[in-house]
Amino acid sequence: MNDLSRGKAGSLSLPERIVIKLKNNISPPQLITVVFSALILVGALLLSMPFSSSTNHSVGFLNAFFTSVSAVCVNGLVVVDTGSAFSVAGQVIIMILIQIGGIGFMTVGVMVAIILGKRIGLKQRLIIQQTTQSTSSQGLVKLSLYMVLIVFAFESVATLVLTLRWMDDMGLAKALYYGMFHSVSAFNNAGFALWSDSLSGFAGDPVVNFTIITLFVVGGLGYIVIVDIFRKRSWRRLSLHSKVVLTASLALTAIGFLLIFLLETWNKATFGDMSYGERIMAALFQSLTPRSAGFNTIDISSMVTASQFLLIILMFIGAASGGTGGGIKTNTVVVLLLATFNTFRGGGQIHAFERKIAHDTVMRALAVVISALAFVLTVALLLIVTENMLEEHFLEVLFEATSAFSTTGLSMGLTNDLSPAGKVIVSITMFLGRLGPLTLAFALSQKRQTSKLGYPEDHILIG
Image (cartoon, rainbow, N blue to C red):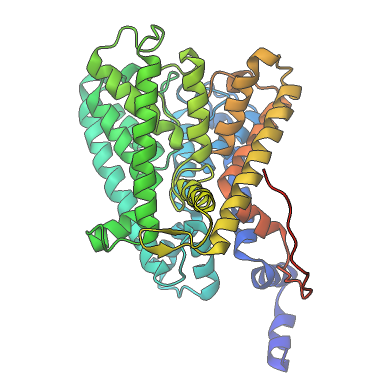
């Protein structure tokens, strides 16, 4: 450090020196973890205030903390009913937390910096790359601008459509507010609703169904894919990432729809009083919502066991990388399936759409799946202990653990009955599920060390 730098450093106060030291030494994943944690804490403090409650009495810090984590991590699990327990002020706070948590705090920061005429440095670009899960550091500021425009466009149009739909039922002002809240919640795959039964009252409403579906499907695909489609406008010119996401999403939707439609057709508790068209809408909605949306138009606890287990699988897979959803991501599943099929064929190059997939990508995908599976099973085990659940309720516990990790927000009814210890466990699960296993691993590690030793190759029996 030169004399000038020492002079400047010496003139700074202790808090300023601490901030500068943290700024220079903290990595992007670590900063993301810290800022998300701070945002959750601020949200919890605000939501625990009496003005955030519909009764002018605090909902309790633990309930407020759980709600804040669920909102920032765009999950949707709730321990108190959003529509009845919170005042309008509390609901607006939740909506703001959802928007910041979904679009990414750094994207919001970029917009503020651009408005103020500030320069976006390399450190900020690396953080944007981490939060958007972009494969390149090029064009990230422009991507952030596109993200804001995409969010504004879809949420504005959806708010208008839902306002017009609900205006006759609840008046213009309330319809506008409800339309805005559910548009923000749906696009960010949060799953928060102002009705205690989510959207079950609109199971046969095509306007509400397809508006909400459009929002959480687009949000789940990811900004990178949407921008790629907008720019290229040709399947042949799309990136490998976009092709994999679109193909996998379509396949999962088709499989989920067909299975749920067939399994629930004879279930009187769910599809019993519905017309054929309403059953198609309900099956489509429930096949898409486990991919991290969190809304439901039929009672999850009334579905047959096979359907509930299918939802667990779909929740675990989740949405696309770079989207507002969670889970291990569709990209991860595709990469591992391709590697598996390639192994069955005798090995060689792993490829998709005439593009080679790097070995490092396969190993990262494997790490994500193994760590996620181990984490979900550990959480399920802890909940069995803390909630004193009997063996006949294991599926309910596994459903809760998977929903929390995948930031989906669906529940078979366990959330409302969680003990204080259970609330803490599920809150931590939602937080780690939002950050992602690899992001957390990078955040906790100081430096990535490469071994200088080389060992002779040997073989281990497999299978």
